[in-house]
Length: 190
Image (cartoon, rainbow, N blue to C red; front, side, top):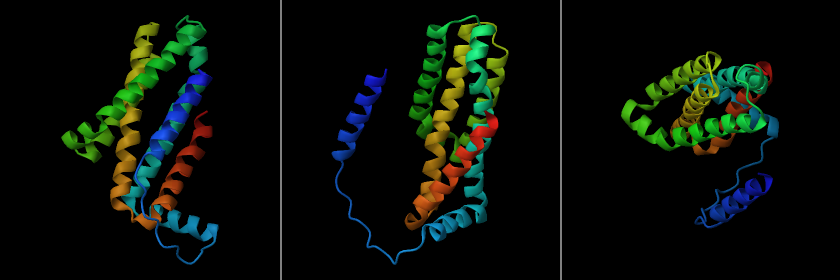
């Protein structure tokens, strides 16, 4: 698995390298890193939509990590599966994530981005409840695949929406603020 992961990164690097060059912006006067971070955070906290887009994955990470932390124990004790079966559960979750990412643009066009994001949050929550009530590994795998699909769609829809409303010069700062909120929430769930 480690070799396959390394190969996937090498292929990704080659694909990125094949993209056409984009002209670099003219450098502005250097701001301190703290001032740049403050500008990004200020932009996020002043805009309700951006704040919602930042808090959605933060709350999701609290819930998701609460589940993932005990998933191996749940799979072993409640579902009666070993390490191979646990690997299959994680594979189901990842496969769902790929499916969700693949259908995200369709969902966004069909439902509208806001409605699609609301639906993915509801689907993730219901899938986690389904996981908790799973009587067997197959139902648990299905629940994890559905949860993964919701997360995959969310991970496409939310950043895409953010990119449409944030000025290019603030994009990195705003994305960093959003990412920091999401990642800092994860240990609380765990």
